Length: 405
Image (tube, rainbow, N blue to C red; front, side, top):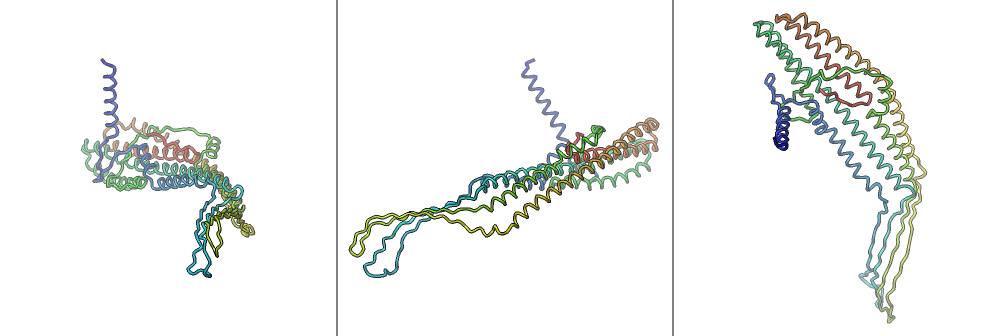
């Protein structure tokens, strides 16, 4: 067979398979339409549609746009042209006004170090805002992942009820099936409630809500060392990185405040041209006059240090916040690791308990079906709690991985 034909067939198959995977049909639960969405797709949409993230991206773009202006010398050139003078009435009869043309050019020579300090501050502000954007993105993704998992928990509980109800109907256990159906209806209300929370991260105005899908068994238990996590937190946590950049910006702002106290000079040159004219019988030829001046302000503002004190105190405040944040990171890592180890052990116990219960309850009695549904619910809770504990531990230790499901 022609190799090119084989490639075309393979490409068509891949595209068809891709469409089947992602073009999942909407489902209706208790009258509410849900659109299935994977965790990766959901987080991608969150990052694209979140108003908080979008607003911060615009802020970063604005700061970047200011950089060329902040890095350019501020000379503020000014050109002036004057003509005249003109008199509505001459001082005396033989007086002649020659109507001179005067041109002047003035500007500003900035005080020493102002431009470079301004450029450094602008660059630091770009880095600070980009670090803040990164922190917001990471935090928003983590919060959205929690909302997704909370909704996924309810969705799986709803499915577990449905499986049990179908089995009970098969064996004609109508009363037990009706009892589970009542509990399932409450679960459907919970699903709608948590699905609305998912939508808030997307600015979703559609009447259709999102239905999370995923295999929680893909999230495996892990082992961690607290010392490694703390070291990683201090070097990689987005909020700590933000404060590091904020400190650099504060230092640059303090330096800019110091340089702004340097005196600006305002030089000016002028040229005046007077055409030839006759006055009182005397012939005057073309004349030119020129001059130069420098204006230097008297720096009375240097008598006050309020701005310098304010900038210095701002830097000291950020240093204090950063010290507290690093100390808090140590506590948060230890607490999160405790929570994760508990969730991990709980998951392992529930997996073992579910397997053991399944061995001795392999029958199709109503009691066995209800018991296995209860055990499945406990296992679902354990898997969700383990996933959330893992994400939170990774987050407080500076690793913002969202496990695949």
